[in-house]
Length: 200
Image (cartoon, rainbow, N blue to C red; front, side, top):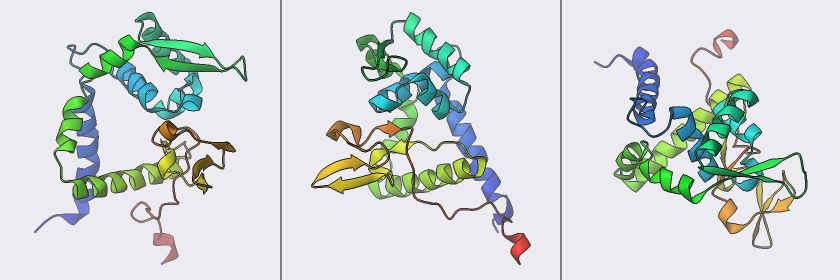
């Protein structure tokens, strides 16, 4: 008979364990785990989110720590910085050709390959479950949740065009599947076990 009481613990431990394996902090990697996370983030985020503050929110770290990671990637020639045309104080960060080439050596590719081998329906269920878990944890801790415009409640259709109600702007076709710092997922019904005990 399965021990259902400990199942949530085992799932949480496995999630953390798989993450640690994928980070590949064994001295053989080209970059640190934090640098890889930043590089992946910059490759997946839309232009308005590819900023030091955007990465700090995504990494759940301080702006100072995020800036140090970004500076280290800049010194390696993996990124380039550009002042915003509309706001001279704002900086957008892009990957250089060297940075994009570096992603071909990303240690997370092993994990991506294993997930890609799952049946499409299983991947879809897995993604839905993890997305709801991520949203629930971000709600509990009152921290930003990240997701793509495609899954965001701010996205509306205006005459066949994707429109962001939060930014009050139309989205380019290649932005819809990018990470956004203004993301708002649907309200999740997930609650920690025992959260409603007081109402019984």
